[in-house]
Each structure stands twice: as C-alpha cells, then as structure tokens.
Length: 544
Image (tube, rainbow, N blue to C red):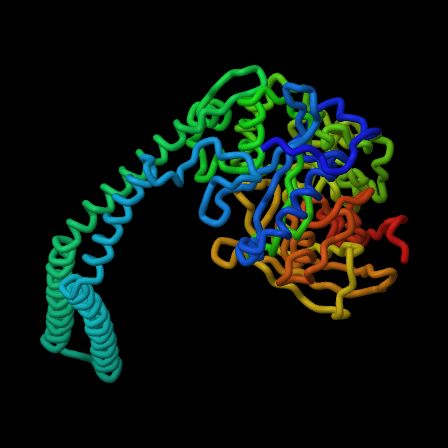
C-alpha cells in the first residue's frame, strides 16, 4: 500500500505542517502523488464505465518507519462494488464482507422490504385503497352538488321575499323549508363520513401487518447503523481510539451521517497510524463526470467534506502539527480599505474588498461589521442589511437605525432593490444574454457549497449579459432576480447553467489570486427621504 514516488523528489522541501484539509493548495508532493494515481486509473479499463460517473480519490504523503517518503492512495465509498483493491489502502471497516454482520442483517432487511412490497401490491390491498379513493371522490362531488343546491334554493327564497310581501305563514314555510334542506345536507354529509370511516378502517386493518413490518425495518436499520458505526474505531496520531458514535456525539451532538468514515481521508490516515507512518500532506481529487446535483470537475482538487469528515478529522489529526485555516489568515485585514461611497445620518454604502467577511465568523478574521461598528458607534444594531460572500467584493448597504434596517430589508424582500454584478468567466460562452433558472439548496455534506436540486432546491433566477470576450475568457454582467447563497457562482459553473465557473472560484472552479465577482451597482429607495439612490463602483482589476 506504501508507494514510492516514480520520479525523484530530491530538492522538493517537505511541508512544515500537515495540510489543513478543508481549505488548501496541494503541496508539490501531493500533486506528484495524485498524478501517479491518475495514471494508474487511466490504465484500469475494467473501471472505465464506473469512473465515467465520477469518484473522489485521495493521496496522503507519508514518511514510513524506515524514514522513506512515499504516499498512500484511497477512494471514497466503494469502487467496482468492493472496498478492497490492491493499489489502495483498505477501509477502516469492510462492510462488504459476505460473512460479516452487515451483509447478514442487510439480507434480513431486504427480505422485509420484499414482504412490504408484496403486501402493498396485493389485489386485496389495491382493491381497498381504490375503493377508499373512489368513496372520497364521490363524497366530494355529491356534497359539492348538495351545497350548490342549498345556495340555489336560498337564492329562490330570497327572490320570493323580494317579489312581494309574504304572510307570516308563508315566511314560516320558507324557514321550515330552509331548515329541512340544511338538515338533509348534514344527514348526507354524516352518511358519507361514516362510509369513508368504515373504508378507512378496513384499509387500516389490512395495513397493520405492513406497518408492523415497516417498524421492524426501521428498528433493524437503526440498530444496524449503530452497530456499524461502532466498528469504525478511528485512531489519531497520539494513538487514541474513538468510534464514530463517540466522535459525532461529542463534536456535533448528533448521530453520524450515512457513509461517515468511508471517505478517502479517514481511510488513509487510519492506515498510516496503524503502520507507524507519519502523515506529511494530503489532497483529494475528483475523477470522472460530475454528478447532476453537485459541481465536480474532472481532475480538480477539493477539500474534505465537512458534514462527514470535519468531526472525524478533528479527532484523527490530533497530535499532528496542522496548517492554520487560510480563511482565517486573510490578507484583507486592514479596515481602512473599506471604502465609503455614500454616507448620511441614516445609512451608508461601502465597497467591501474581496477576502473580508460581511459579518463576524468563527475565527479572528476582520469583518465589515467590525469596521462599521467602530466607524459609527452611535448606530443601532444590526447594521448589515445584506451580505456578500467573503471572496466577493462590492457594494454593501449599512443601516444606522433599526427602522431603516427593517425598511431596507423589506425592499430586498419585495425585490425593489436593483443589483448588478460584474464577473469574469473562466471560458467562453456562446450566448450573448439570457436567463438561468436553477433551484438551489445547501449541500449537507459540503457546507458552504450549494447544489442544484430540482426537488428540494429553492427557486433561483439570474439574468446575464456578455460585455466582452478575450483570451478564452468571458466578461459578463449579472443580475440576480433572487438572492440565494452562491447563486451567481453555481449558475455560472453548473452544466445546466453556463457551464463555465467564475475565475478564481475555489468552490466551483479553480483557484486564482481572487474570485472575479464584484457587486458593482446598487439602486434603492431611501427609507427616509424617498429619493432613489443609485451607486456604482467598478472593479479596477476586471478591465478587458
């Protein structure tokens, strides 16, 4: 499993600290190791079809007991239906073993699934379900007609009252007629309720066995998952061992998500610790086509997933000297660089530099809020009206009173604020203008990444206009109709959008000196004066 480098590594300095796994630039040795793994993958004809759908691989540069520097390789999940392949490190726990408890219990759960399917598709169950559906439909139609008749008769009685004065006996007869008709409707309504209740009871009785089986399946699945997580006993560099349940309970206060412990990074670290190797650097890369919901590019490097791996690696890396989070060492820490473009006693507009947070985060990184809080000490909270991604530069609205803040946010909610962004795309697109409609939601395992999801995603709409093309890149103006997280970045990069990421987009494209996305125009109604305010600030480094 320990691979020597095929090329000489003489002259390449070893890293001083281990890679920070959630935001990194691959070390030269990691790049060399990844290149060798990729050559190996290209030679595996039997995996070609499977890999066309894409898979995450990882490399871990290590020093072994003999002092030799080499690397380990791993894949996430299964490959060709198996956890074990000669070139790659083994899993932390092999759940595919045919004689293991997982496969045995999986067969039991599969048998229960078949029983449920058979019962749900049986003629009796289908007949009872169809009968109930027909009764509900017929009841709705009959009662709707009954209500229509009540309204019609009432209209006729009202017309008779208006046509000529009625005697007391005639009025009394109309009242009795109304009462009788209402009573008849309520009797019919009660009859239908009783018939439907009886049909529901019959169906419920037939479904009792199905419900019992579903509950048994649920309990068995939960117990199997718990037992499986207990088998993932993970080491760290200090030699301490903890299972997945313990790790997630302490760090996240929840049960581990499905697939936890089966990513490439935990597999490689576990093998290294078991065999006395010291991890020096790591990197993970995507190989093959992109999933429909996520944005993965063939051959690109990606950080470890946070949903599954952050708690695990938080344990496994203890004892190693790990690089600082680069996001907490932002170069844009000088508050004086926050340029003010508009300022009065009620609000301000500032030009946020790229690399600065809009609001305080977990670390020590300076935020726009920190700067404006010092600039306007008398201002009321919460001040920040809307946000820009840390990597995005451009115009931000600041409110100095709570009432102004509420009114400006209402303008955003009602889409009364006009916003325009400038971006440079890392490729050429054919269309000159158009609209992108792709629903977005958070990627639960890779926050803060967003994903396109046609079932769970919220509607997101962006219009675009090309302003120039040069050297294989495209300059565009973007207008977000909605305001979803990472909307512009995903709409540019996703194959169903423009299929071309923004230059410097480390989440959905490739790293550059900065993300070339800038909020250049903002127009809104002043909440106090009623005047329409329009502010424009072009990005100096976006010129064609």
